[in-house]
Picture (cartoon, rainbow, N blue to C red):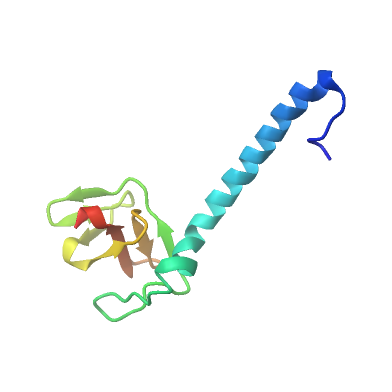
Length: 114
């Protein structure tokens, strides 16, 4: 095992290596699990639908969106897309979520934004 050692002089180098490996594994898990969270946990299990009666979670699934701006009557996404306040749904985890492929099927905002 890489992280196990009996030699004290190599202990600090191996400890640092173990910390870096653990950090990279955690970062990898977080990065690749975020898109799946909405599908597996709350958006899909609650069968959310938009105003057109389409399910929010589907083939394109949902992804967290960072850098969303709340402007009067709408939200502006970093991609330049806009979503009217009347079309948003409440996010159970306090994050902004965009569902859909080339067009937005559903957009979830933190409950504090309502």
